[in-house]
Length: 128
Image (cartoon, rainbow, N blue to C red):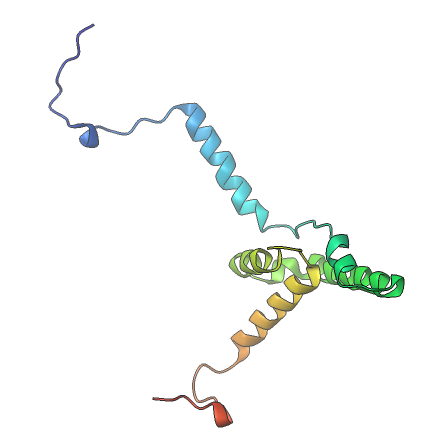
């Protein structure tokens, strides 16, 4: 079948997506959106082992991580999705830690309560 010229350049032609491409895109977007809907699951043992020189220190670290995860699960929905995503990305880079995620979220929340202007920074005054 010979090609016929329609007068449209390729960049002017309407974009057609197959149903398969559309379905795949929807799944990817849904997965990205739901990724921040739940507290992530990490294996924190390597992180705790690396920072613990005794069995007692290892147990203490694992307990702290477990406690932090419980706090995250209990309050996950109170933090905005954007904040959760940023803290998970930051704390989960090398050796993920629930304590780091929780601390990040708590600090971000506290920063939002500070006044935006007229802070007395003492010796850290803004330099013009």
